[in-house]
Length: 214
Image 1 (cartoon, rainbow, N blue to C red):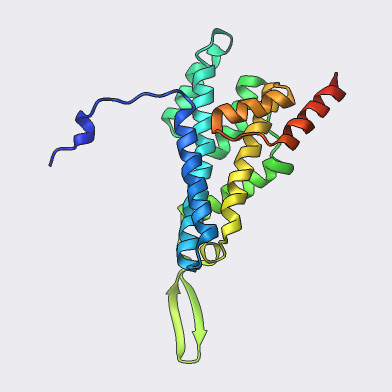
Image 2 (spheres, one colour; image 1 turned 90 degrees about the horizontal axis):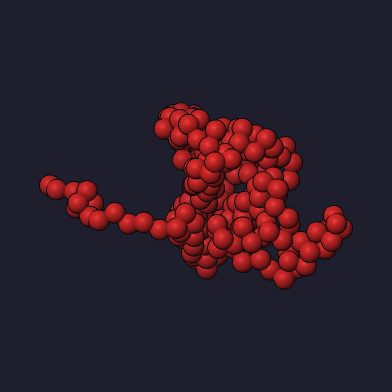
């Protein structure tokens, strides 16, 4: 059977286009979870939203550093970034190492949104790289062996999807603060890359912070 995708014309878009699509899909999943009364459907949608939201941030890092290292002032790092992409370095590694290597500054992953991201990444990994625990449970009728611990999946709620989206939104804004952008420009960059519109109170807070820094 022929693979029609192999002969289809290649499709191109701006660097941010795929990120908007990913985030829009995650939002639809979150909205479906919030409006559903079926626990199984809710958990399935929330799990998918979490996987896709973390994938959004990884795609953002891959694209942003791939693009920036084409610039003459960052081209020194092009080969090492491409090597990491080729060897499929982990998201945790890229989040820790790439900003330090290319920008000379790091995301703070020990508190705030950085810490929230690591917790989200751990949850994503538990869901995506699920490993059976081979648990044993005693019940009145006897003992059941070889069960898988599904606690992480079964504990998912509709709020978890929105929390995941908010964490990545905030992390991208924080990333641009590390890049050296002003608070207002961090919001503009977040909108460009993710399609996340800044709320009036966020704009006001960014302007106020910027005024205090001047």
